[in-house]
Image (tube, rainbow, N blue to C red; front, side, top):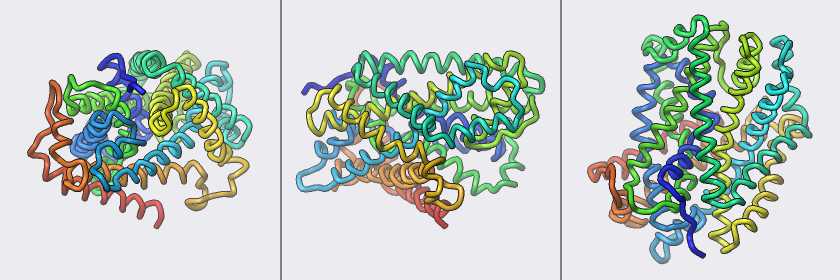
Length: 455
């Protein structure tokens, strides 16, 4: 079966960026920036994004382009006879399924909130009543499952149309609209009273706040955010590498994706912090910020229903861009493993994803008694932990060792693939760093993440 290809370089960059740009960019990054000293944290984050994220993303691209396969078969193609690197492919495939099984629930909530904001359901509600809307949505198993299934239908429907006509075309339009809506929201947020205080708090370095919250905590937070924001370690980037030609080197392409990912994260903060400062509310982290704090701000804002609807358009595009990218990766598993048609692969995976996502969708209602990570946790938290704290770091280690060790694909093969084409080359002198130092950093992130969650 002939390998499908993307029609343009722009499609490749936007698809990769869409996979990286997710809900963590929107609420987690701004919160961490505020917590750890504004611009001071941004500088630390950008440093780790380059030294941690960029090498691994280039390795994923190289494995994908070198094998012309998804993670389901890429190690089979590139490993030497008798080697067992391909065993990780099953872990990576499982990781992608686990990721969509909780991400579809969150995206479903986003879609529900877009509809509620569009209908004006929040108008006239007190802050407590706005908070109850989210609690009620979580506690309603029928509603949560309905919105989750709708998200799966949208994602699978786009993948079924085809790589170029469906996935690439829709992602281009969606990412363009996401950036356009984001600019409008930034302009509105910056026009509010006291908005500049929010900008100062957000972007001007305050090393005293950095010290108060612990320099080590800030460094670990920046490392973790840089690492997890790119969705690396599970073949999410490798699949897009398999869809492009050798006209351009992969380091330059990876850098462009990093810049776009960071741009969206920084702009999200320019929407949230000025608005929160203007209405004198705390930019708390997690779902509460998006589903409770911001709807209250829109209620108090002139034309708030319009701006609130636009904000949830923005949030839905961010969520769907990730879901479409991961769905495409999952569909490609079945195509590569069984040589099935795209439509047949989509139908099978639609059923698997819907059934697999139900426990998470009812995790705050029917399964609320199941608290796997301690009091207050849910199925969603367990799946997020397995993907973010276990599979992603271990997968990144596999890519690092596979691309730098003679017992794997090897440095020579990796560097030849990464530097094929025009553009920025992966530096040969970085070999010692990516072979020995970077794996130690990833192991530290992995072990500290386990310690933080489990002890």
